[in-house]
Image (cartoon, rainbow, N blue to C red; front, top):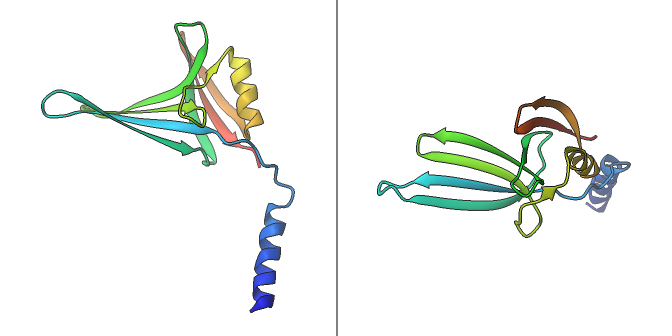
Length: 129
């Protein structure tokens, strides 16, 4: 039994050997629904990004900074919004797109694709191996 535990520990250490530990990327998911009375109900959840691929938009904010988020219309009554936040759930702002790209890279994700439009840029990131 001790030999089996030793082998399992050795295999897991070999698998993680050489992999850089990157800082965590926190995301907030907000689901907003309209109830039958016409009132909006919001539900937020904080989670840590772990996907191999990740899509998000960089949008110019009113304070001339940039915020990273993605909005999806799930149904006519339901909208899902995902945004990059800090560990306390506060929105993470960036001073420029270069700062955002460098921040993503320093957190273990490299840009795979981008699509620019007038007020935002859509990005696809891939996890660095």
